[in-house]
Image (cartoon, rainbow, N blue to C red):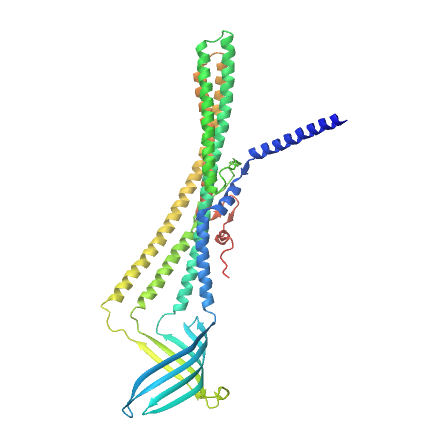
Length: 504
């Protein structure tokens, strides 16, 4: 009984070890299947360019939030616990010198409210303090101790100049919009680059499959000629050529394996994946039936392309700078109005026993006289900048139209290329099968059959490349027009921002 138990334990242990090793083996060879959408998603999370665009977007969003916060009521308090001053002064009334000593402590509380529409500021200020003042004059010392409090409401308004607060707010809004557009363009560019990498790896993967099929066909050819040579039906040098073809096919297969692994590593690095991950590409290169109207494509491109909005932002920003330039050495004024009361008394409770009204009005002007033509020169320079921005906008529109037309023509051409490449594959397959039969009958050498095999492999690769070129051009059309012709729906630029356009 004990021996049976020991045997059962041994069998159970062996089974457990086998299961563990089998599971580890499966884990070691597990592959990550990558579709195009999954690859784009991974790159979007790991791409340094996307991260930089997001950080830039955060920068302008928070700057805009800060500017909005600065337009709300600002509360502040200044506290001066102790201030002492002793000075020697001359009294013109008595033609005598006297010494004055002043000890005071005070604090100021204020509320400032900027007014966006007028560029003015409303302030409510309260200054409370205590002071002790002593003066030595003609041998007599006089002393005064009192509490003071001044409460007033003031309004400060710039005159005859531009609204600086509104201009700064508009600039920050444009900067934030531009950052959003840059982020969206970066996403579209990332999709384009990932797609190119993805199909490049797929081509290497397909090339490897074709090389395997080529090796299988070469092995079949080798087996045929080997049997014929052994039966004395073919010359021995045919076997040598068949062996050479087989070795070449094996070498080509190994080269394709190396090329595929190198392409996978580059793709994983671009996606930000772990280089030790094993990946396999799952691609659909079937050609969808897509109807493209050139006029509609151009119309969507001109109405939706975000680069045009960026050029408009450049023009608006240049105009803002022109406003600032025109404000150099300008005639401007400032109006300050304040109403309030002030009280003072040695007793804190009686500080407003006899208050004093403290109204004030201040009107000032700055009048430029002569600047040697500096302002006019700077204005002309900035106007040249605006004209340049307008030219860039017009050229951008032309370039968009040209690019869309190019993509449209390339799409039509690729459809023709696909038809031709598909027919070439059929012809190459039929040609290979016919010549393989001739090879079996001894009417064709191994070298000639190898040429037909290479031709078939090349035509298969050309067909796959034509399909991928069409898919890439279709993606390029979507990027150029911001319209998905495959699904017949527009791409709304706001959808590309990942809900980052709303400020706090």
